[in-house]
Structures are given as C-alpha cells and as structure tokens.
Length: 125
Figure 1: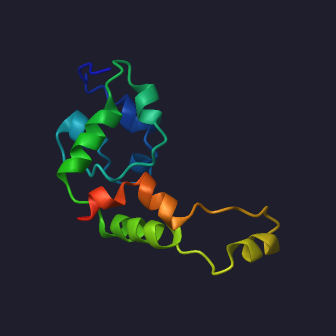
Figure 2: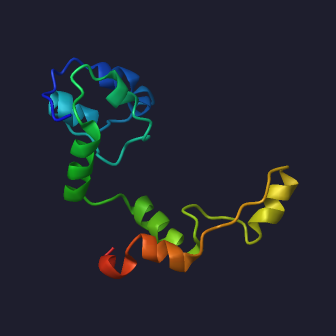
C-alpha cells in the first residue's frame, strides 16, 4: 500500500478531525500544510476513502516519531503505567460502574502493562 497520493482530498472530506475544525495530518500529505500527526481519531475513514490505497497509517507513525507527543499524551502514558488507565478513574471504578448500571471491569495490572509497553526499554519517555 505505498502508492502515490493523488491529492484528491477524499480522505480529508471523511476525516472527523477535519470536520471538527482541526488541522489533521492529512493536510501534510495532501497540501504540504501544517498538520499534527497526533490529531487522529484512529477511525481509518481516511484509509477507506483513499482510491490509491496510500498507507496513511505508516506515514502518520513515521511523522509521529519525528515530532514530540502533546503533553496530554505524556500524562496519559504516565497514568497508564501508574494506574492501568489512560484517563483518571474513580478510586473504586466498579462501584461507580454499578451506580451507572454498567458491568464491572477487570483492569490489567500495571506490571503487565509495563511489560507490554517494554517500559524497561523506554525509560526516556
């Protein structure tokens, strides 16, 4: 899927980030404009819309490796390592879920997450 982008704009039309007014990574591919590789809903509507089957995901990952993650991403990463959740959660998550009529969840342990994320290899993050 490393085909050449025709700059048709079909990916931009389907992008929820663009529809919400954000400057998505697609602008870099299509128009050479500024656009953050970190602004992505991971819905892959852009990929589905591309008539040339350009590997948009590979290009985005490559671009992400070259630009720092937003501060909010770093905070989420730290929270995942510390609590097992990317977003702040109540101390008793399942009690809150019971109140909302939701089934309980079993969170993965922080140690397992560190192993999955190869935290020992990523001490700089």
